[in-house]
Image 1 (cartoon, helix red, strand yellow):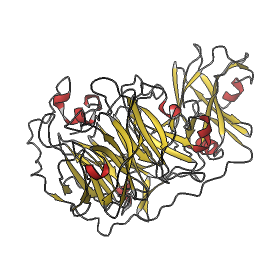
Image 2 (cartoon, one colour):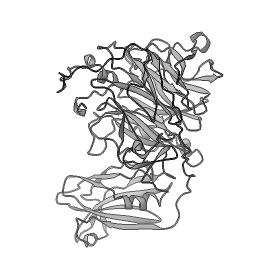
Image 3 (cartoon, helix red, strand yellow):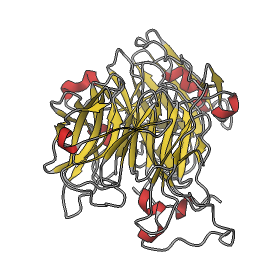
Image 4 (cartoon, one colour):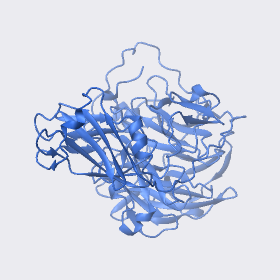
Length: 550
């Protein structure tokens, strides 16, 4: 029985451990049913992926900026055909509407079709509006009605294709005007938008408290589909997926009760993610899969690292603190070439020993890996006034996005820290860049960043998804519900100090769910169309959305 989102906890550990909540969880309606079968110990036997192979689904070549004129007109069928004639063409700022979404300075993937324009009514009585996209090459006008104080207008797909598809890597101004009758039209201040050079490719897995498991989809699909679902009253927490999309790992926190309940790491091929697949490997807190899905690096609840074969569970190596300088390590992630591990290292044990989520004295480090051996870790960003955690590699392995938060109080908090912010550093070290436009200010709990697997414009345009409590217009507000957002990191803007663009809300998720840890792969593995969910088909071993834009 799925728990309502309003009863779910925002924290992994609170969601999986009712005893850590301030109030007890109400009993489920089917509480009289027999309890689910518990894992019989921690034997480990992962089924091999067998003949399953992810086919080649290469992204399109980076597009050049759009050229030539563009434009068009759309009139909402609910309006009379003559609605455009209600606008005088003369602009006024008095009583003007105010756009609240999209965010000013945001960059939008051309294949993220389901965008809803949202604005506040400027004055009582305004009921007919013109939504205009324009630049020096043309404009597109959409006319719609709204008699409410807070207006929402889902962009028609054909209009989005005309605007986004014909303005690749270009700026566009968005304004909303109210019909002024015989007088001037109240026109909102402009919101500046930019569009990606080509469609954003990749498969996405993320964790949701409503499911207490993971969803997945290929960017471009309308809705994500449940993927890893725990048994009733269970909890499958942190997850990792191999870069090629072949294998998934997740933390099973379903056994036992209380804050010290055991954790185990489970693995399965992504084309057959049975709940029971893989047995359990304990202890386990966070993990990383090699790019090819053949190895898994597991960090236990005290930060000790063990490398295992992902198919047989055989121990390949253990990370020797004396040789690597790593006393406690968490949140590992493998570089795209498989030769380095980015991780959070601590000079003391985690604050939350049972879970390893809150790490004290947290540094950002890179540890080399070759021939089954780990080398000395090199600290890229050391803790001082801040702690650093949740690293993720750019597709070319040259950059690492991560999170920093103030190292204040007796319990410096990495997980769910409201002051968390996104940052960027070269994998070789050097200046740290604040991703302020992506973070959208302090207090939004912007965290769990993960780079998409493909870049654009010759590696200059990168995309990173993350979890945040940024207000999504009128739909999600109050900084209470973490949702998934996508921001662009534009290396052409490094000279400006902040290379990020403002983010976009990812429209495939439910706005009443708490969503975390957006993990990207090159493709969603599949063998038949049904495995891809609604709106996508299986082609050459990978899911391809029905809706694409070239």
